[in-house]
Length: 196
Length: 190
Image 1 (tube, chains in turn orange, yellow):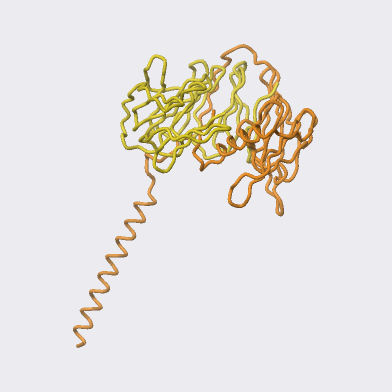
Image 2 (cartoon, rainbow over the protein chains, first blue to last red):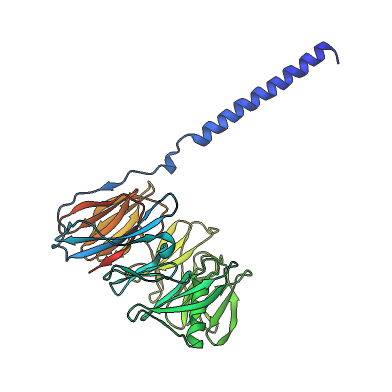
């Protein structure tokens, strides 16, 4: 290869590299520029003035996750509202995240018991964790909070039926167990079942 | 106790306690989420292709209910749910419809009931709109969050506005900021 040919090759390579660089810059700019169709509007809270009678007194229960260095904590907090005015918050229970976990879909039962996704139960009146669930909440039916152990492959194992009123573990009949297992498959997000 | 399951070949399969499972029929559906809602103990509402809503009973007999003019015929992941007033909402391709199975009719769902006079809709800026007795009270950006975005009790609603939790009371017409920590709404008690 002569010196001129080498020079032409180097020029071509430089031109291709330059074109690639320009293309990459344009693509990155297109990907990172703001798109109006993806913009979120800000939160807007209207001060409407009273729109109804004075509210009946009620309390809102929330759970907070506190990120610790070694272990996360869960805190259940109650906010009382009197005549629509919030009162100072009260901590109802605080403990390691692993003992209670995340909330279930309909976490408060009988206006008193807070139930987690894992089947654990906090008595909001007694301010105590009264049951640690088996791992996956299957269903709250009647007085029972039913949870199941789950193995590594996601299969349901032994069922545990806890009664928050008596604070006792109750034995399930074979038919009840079969019903709860059917319901348990429904609570598994990949099973795609709809139970009734 | 019974369950409907959609298998990989898009067939409906019925499970009942104490009985062998039963294959019902094949439908044009996506397996997850299962596009079905129980109407009573004997029948459920589902679709055979987007917009073609049918009732199916436990023997697999199907009755056409209504044909909904969905814009995206090929949209995936259509599903049914009930709002706080028990009305059936059919979601397909970003559109929502209220379905009346008795009258075999549909209408576009502009506002979904959240209970106790509160309703929810959405604007064109990825925000939920909340109103109380037809008066708008808030717009809140969509957020991926565990648990509910809003929860009502008579005269009050708790709503996440971005990362903070607020409560609005009808008696005062004002918002109160409660918490800015990582929190989940558990519920209202009395």
